Image (cartoon, rainbow, N blue to C red; front, side):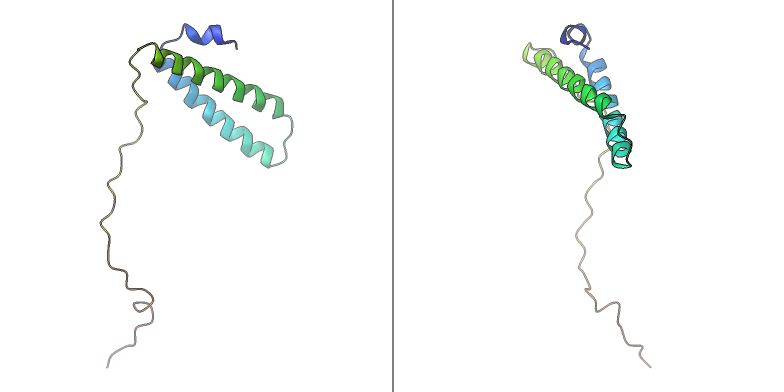
Amino acid sequence: MKHKTFSGVDADDLQRQIHDSQEQLFRLRFQMGMGQQEGLTKYRGLKKDRARMLTALRAKEIAGEKITPLSKAAPVAPKAPTKSKGLGGLFKRKQK
């Protein structure tokens, strides 16, 4: 796809397409790691298309268009730090 095709798309659709292409890249990398080499040209083209989408999204941001990030899973609150017992808890002697 050319850059002109991405310039007419709104920011939400661009973000969805970027997310989808990122998942496709992950799958292709995994397949190529398993020894399937026929996806190399598709992988390269997909990387270039994703870069074009990111460029179009950034251009919209610079132009002043409001861009809201895609909603992801709810953020997980960090766990409170607990005192580590170390290995002492694993090798406790039985008390009589």
